[in-house]
Length: 259
Image 1: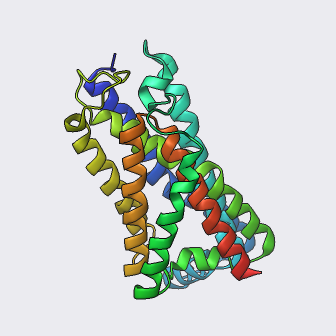
Image 2: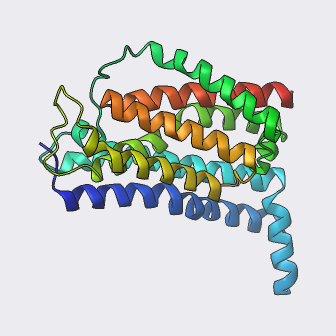
């Protein structure tokens, strides 16, 4: 049985805030102390202080501090997603749709990315490279930070984002009377969750700097695919697997070009 509607929305919004605002707050919380400790003496005027802080933010130590902040926020999102349901009467798997994958074999999910990658290749050919500045900076700094970033993108990021968008948010948008264990797929009940989870995921990446036509199209294609997997399989594990594989391929590509 589904948790109450309001409880599902509180859960989803808390995770969404942890994922989004948490990244900013954690980034600042890590960045400022490092800035103060490494910039001695501090500039006296507010203008010079602002300029020094902005310069520090795009320097290797500043970027490292921000990456650590993002990793902390992502990790906190996963921990909250898995721990908060323990205080309710419903099991965690219902809150996040941590059910066995139905209707398609799990091993076919990575193979489904092949045509998706082909489409992404066509998009790049027509619209150019993604040119996401944050990615270029992260994968062009020191090797240790590059490897740490790649590990974070492949490990914690897919779980954090899918638990929020295709797990908690998707479930919050389902009708309260919806039967999660039903063998027959009720397409009408899934239309709104599919659309909103897909758009919200795209919006997050637009805010994160995926602003070129090529980057936007690729994110829309990926998000549509991930939400589709959640709808068809009835499980958040399907988009987690697909997201992890996609990020792994992207990280390998960026690592290859940065070495």
